[in-house]
Length: 269
Image (cartoon, rainbow, N blue to C red; front, side, top):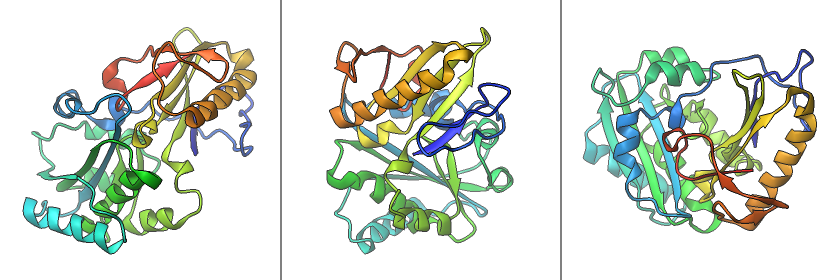
């Protein structure tokens, strides 16, 4: 799990799990992990309740490859990684005014690689949507497929968590023991009314709804965040859940975020 937390008080919040220090403020991420309204609409059809949704975007310094070549490279990379054949959508596109992606908002949300993203001339979208596979094979397959179409100077962006990596960084990430935990980020944002919202990004990759808690007074942030983490871990242990379900001692309800602001499903408490 990676934390992407904004400061919640003049003294940086020390997180309950791992004791990580909150980073400096950054702009809020674009809705849907960087997908514009058009692309979100185009990809919304298909996933059902409990389906997994994984989208990697490979940004290239050169124009995009032909669709057939990109699909073959992705397929070969998945097989070379020893993974079973996974139904992936591989779509190359030029980076131009017609690209249905808000690159400015996406670059603003990235920790690094924003300059390379701004200079990109092509992109290849690698997407999985369907039932979660054993050992989260859908996540690993999409990542290896992205590596298959990525030259060394590419930037690969997980559009759910808004994390950008070079191919070397992504390959190292897949070999790390924490790779599954790092599929989800936790974020805290302060609203106009000064209350805090905790939210996850990336749960859709595992076939689970993202989690949200709103209206937290700043003075209660530490205790509320500890409770949020408890419910989040309980949700992972419980499996897919919908509003009305009881998980971690709370009754889940619909999220305040609009549907286009999440990758697939979302629940709140």
